[in-house]
Length: 565
Image 1 (cartoon, one colour):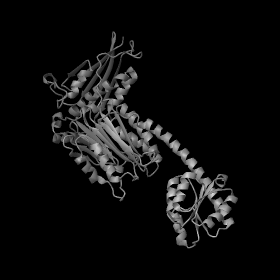
Image 2 (cartoon, one colour; image 1 turned 90 degrees about the horizontal axis):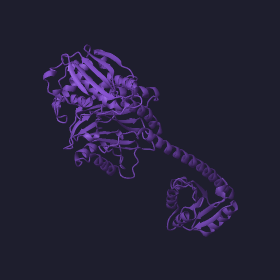
Image 3 (cartoon, helix red, strand yellow; image 1 turned 135 degrees about the vertical axis):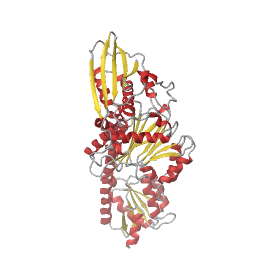
Image 4 (cartoon, rainbow, N blue to C red; image 1 turned 30 degrees about the vertical axis):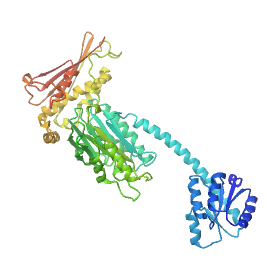
């Protein structure tokens, strides 16, 4: 507290007698004094001399004390420099005007040395407290910066980096309650999650860590979108306080760039834009409650399908975008967003939206909520290349004869509704054979075989329906309806691992209860890029040593092999 008593006091008064009297009193208190005769001189001396306390007259030539105080307080920013007004006025309105101008106290003329001393001590205590608060704030700010760095590295650093996947998260504070996560599944589908926790700042950001952990662990292992959302909801329900929840959009872009699966839980519309015309093709609205509200959810009730074409754009955003306000307290709104999309130059939607948003809000408008925008461009480069190996370099775990083994699992109608057996079986293979490098290939093969058995075998769906948008919608509506009511039929998996000299192979046999097809007279497509159906079979043939059909066409046998020498 003694620092202020040893500092400089700036006396601002156009009356010389008043300055002399106050100077004498302040010198006795231990201050050095500097003097100004008007408000402008006071401002100049403030910048030059850096006083620790200011005594400001109200009525002066050139610039009055009110305006001088406003400018000095603005220049001081977070540093506390007490301003005590000197006034002969005692009416409440005049004194209130001193406080509104930024004054911290007032001293009524003629000066009383005991009152002056008490006001100085009061200002010293406030200054000391302010210094302590600023120190604590600086420490907290530094800790938040460190935490933000850890947060970004832990959550966002593992996101896919691709020029066709663009996103921006503008936090309302240091931390954002919005989050963006992206990852590829082993079957090469693109999973993109946009989420918005209740509120913003550190409290909202804390929930992002467990969401990220569940999302990445389950996506990497090949679990379905429904299972991932169920896992996230279970985690959040167990940890979030009452009244806090997580709005989420999960978009799954099929590895064939044929369709997207959209799950919207309490978020704004997912928008699909035609890549050629910028016209909006689909708006997929929220069909479920935010995650963390209910203990048990059924993500299938949120599921929406939409066909996509080459260069289509998928847009996801948080409500902070449409609820952003300008200086006149008007919202940016959905209509302006849709107009930005429609009026944007080709392939410039993302930039156009932010240009229009920034122009609308202005540079000095602080937003009350986090703003997030995601743009996915549906081109082949947005998906990873399929890894086809002519030769697998054996690791130390793969060398030698590790013995043969067999596994058989049967999934009946009701179980097929609830369980995706592929991640279970692939993870078992990884555990038994140490083939982590081949997870993608094995997952792709088994997924294609299983989907073929389930969709075309058990459910009896015709893939030719997907040749046009109307048939596409019919295909998936029929699929969901038949799957929801499935109570018969089966899919049987038989896995066997064989060792032959210096080669080891996995024999995948999948049998379904469907009517099969005439595989002996069936001609598979020759061009994977243009084929409307049968592309999965071409992919399996690329990845495996062999693919055969038996029985009535309802038994598929694929062999996947590698060297052990």
